Image 1 (cartoon, protein in one colour):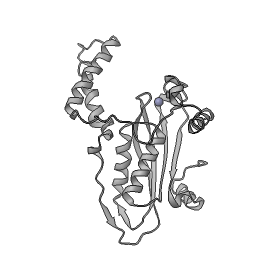
Image 2 (spheres, protein in one colour; image 1 turned 90 degrees about the vertical axis):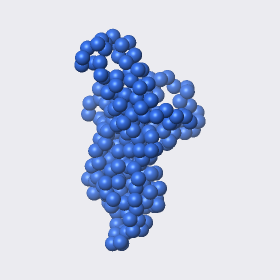
Image 3 (cartoon, rainbow, N blue to C red; image 1 turned 30 degrees about the vertical axis):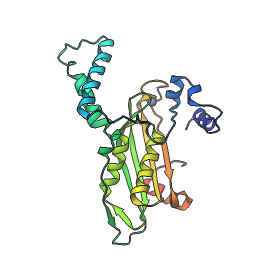
Image 4 (cartoon, rainbow, N blue to C red; image 1 turned 120 degrees about the vertical axis):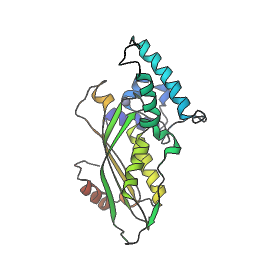
Length: 239
Ligand SMILES: [Zn+2]
């Protein structure tokens, strides 16, 4: 985390500064956020997916027209509909709890009570401040409390929370809390190493930086367990 970001976040914690004291650009550039839960309206699912697609299509057409684009062009005319469908059915499908992966638990028959690490889970998300991609690798681990889940489900939980407008810290915590809940254990670790196109392609235009965020629950807060996890992940970080 950048020095300024640490400073701003600690000021926010002490309640000496609130997000409403900051300008739009500052909130976006420092990637500040307010809540672990994705902020949603109470009536978020009153409209059906098809109704949302129609509405977004019309709004996106207005954006393109305002930009001065000629929507009669054969290449552009289908774009509003394509974008709307992509938002609802793909890249923001994780906003809808109906799309949450159903996870079946299995008995831990083999009494495997060591750490299980699923690493290098590629994900694509989008920054909630700029609506441009965040992409990278997630590494998740847990120590079984007697139940196990299929490995592909770990991947699906990551993908579900990635398919929302996000900030990286919230994505990390949402994945971790969900796994703690499903697996009925605090012993969960999540490490995310990602690039933010809003940092590399605009704003400060830093092409080389990557952001690492982590969550260490239960036994992962012990140094030996955490180091074992990091050794498996083989990431040379100071986390
Ligand atoms: Zn951003």
